Length: 366
Image (cartoon, rainbow, N blue to C red; front, side, top):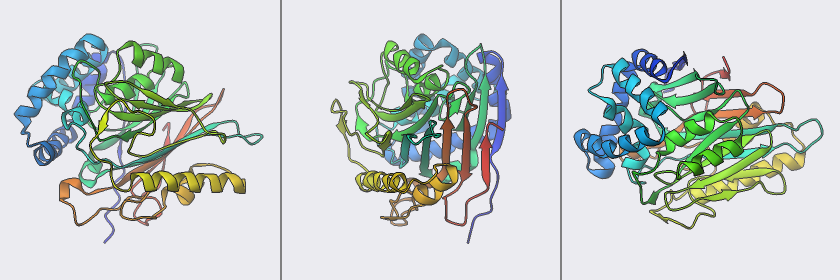
């Protein structure tokens, strides 16, 4: 039975950090509380942590966030107040979910960045399937944020989380691939805040410089960043970073294991990660050789609807053999086009592309 399509909520926030946080919390209070319940169950399953224990870990990150990114900390305080939560630690816990789980969450996700080489196609395409547990889908939102003279942010995020997947008005875009690796370091900024910093930057180079100046990230992750100059893979970890440049076709691909970063110990890839990586490379290069026009629709049909090696396919399906807290599927698909001197655009599809259960194309900006 196909689940009923319920369109995501779209919210536009502007003002000071506090004003943005307050409105975020007020508008999404129910979703934020729901996310806390979902992650409490997942933390119990993966790490044997109840919510008071989670909040205790979050306290360590809160002091770091307040010290290194006081504007983002003020936004989180506003979210907590607006949502009527006990205090800011509940919001910090959501934004540090990757760090608190110590690399044990089994997020999927397949991403690609591609600088078009053919005449008349100088734009950069950035796209991914975001794979996670179905229960969070009802708490996802499409959000815009405008503050303090920074580029305007357009992203798809989880309620209560201030940085995620999307692009900004300066044509800087980001995708995210989770990496299962230890350690985590609470003296550094959480990965989801790193995404927000990228989305608040006027260029990809400026974003990388800012992350380095802040001392790096608290846990391992891959951020695929792009602007009109092209895509770049950021294999980030608390012990050191590695960077991936485009191949000879202008492409960067990533799934859920590091390709070049040898600083950390990975705790076990998703078994399909290397298969998905080879598959997305194969399909993209076939498209390139055929000379097909690359847009959101063709990407969804030719790559992101692919079911090879199901259930751990590019278009992921739930594995019924796993506990419900670990059953990952493609929750949404996003394709962005970032061009020099043109308005950046994105297309989002809620649900698994090509499955018949997905919703209509949702445009960004809206």
